[in-house]
Image (cartoon, rainbow, N blue to C red; front, top):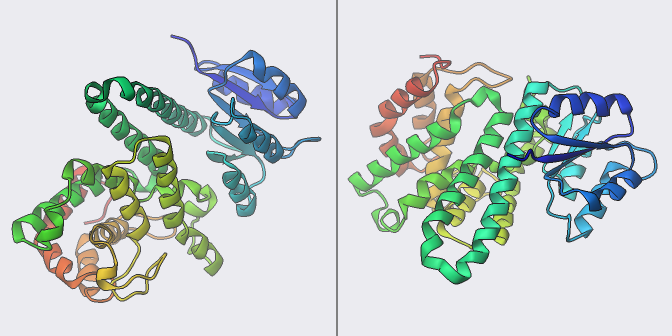
Length: 361
């Protein structure tokens, strides 16, 4: 099987050798030390991924990326910045220009390899999806099942990539889907908001929850794993993950055929931090203005967040978490849904024990 092709651009020969030695067993690696040599190399190879340093003489990494994005022939190749610049503004600038990740030096080789692997898997899946969409013109019926499976694979890969960056929350994505399935089943059983819930296509609704925190892919590792509480400015940046999440899903929609699970995913991503009393974000929606899927997900997200360890605090007990959530009925959460939470909280507790033993009891 042919190895994926990676290009590393860095004016420092030591850095080039170090990165190449990490990658060479799994990938075919080409190295260049300047923008000139990089663009001279491109016509002769077909890169699957480009790794760019930021600070280089002549044309810097940001300028190289801008030129790549202007070229239709190479503009879709994923680009990752590898740099010693570890400030939030530099990282945000790189992501705005279209980089898919921003890795700061020094880094752990195993974690570096895993992130490269995840990005390549996602890129290859998107490429395959585009090719299959062309085939749909001739064989729509035959391809429907295959496309659905591929879309779910992309969901899973994207979600795992986000979760991988927050190692403290290991297993969160799987737990979230299980919590959601239990909650929706109970809503149906009790007839809670039945007119709306009965219209949900659960084949897409439950998997779509994997993307509810996808916007964190645009948030700095430094911020995600900060071992202290956020400053006001940092919290304002973190809050933007909801906006980034909706934007990312819209980007996927532009590359694929619009469908239900992406519609559900946008609702989850954009509304799971809204609060019943209107004090949430990003829109400050209030009560029934908040989409019902977002009202449900907000309870699930807070529950799992409270019983999970964070870089800046220890996990709290499930009993205390339940009290916090129930006590927030009418402020943070829909009171009707909190009454339902009382019926499912023991099942939530069982799931958290089964999926991760690092929680406190």
